[in-house]
Length: 240
Image 1 (tube, rainbow, N blue to C red):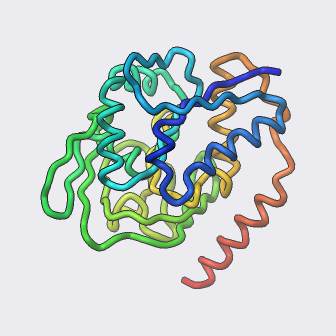
Image 2: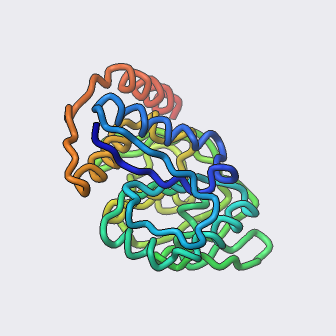
């Protein structure tokens, strides 16, 4: 059985709104393809190498927990930047997405330094952007999820999708997330992968391509997943 390795960053702190479900989805859909998955929980990055990492995952957390996580990520900042540029499949949620940028400004004006890996900027306001979201993606089709964030994120990279219902990166440009090379950053909790098998398969397929592992079958029976997604979409768009 072929194997890929997922580095799960600080699962003890970054599991806001059930983000661990993303790991469960990756493992299950890999299992259906007879691909073995090894999940490595990363608590401390001192001396860590990303050489044998096939998928990098950072969940969401509170501002305090995310600041602690950022301090750990700073130790491997150069490695992570190089890996992203090289096409390492990466999924970052909420704070994990925000702190790839230059800084995060809190509602009281405090500036928290980010990793400055990408040209992203986030400022937070007291009024939160919350609720179910539907968007259209050129790569993945329709995407659904749940957002709950005070941050307003701004960048010029390709987005994950165009918002049809909800807020997305901020409350102005109707774009959600980032899709740069094989990096996906998003505000979608819920978690995102069980609701959107296309993104799950994308991450797995890219990881397999890099390791020259067979990704078969290309398509699984997704009738249950599609029915669940369609129910969400129909409800939300009917309410508009």
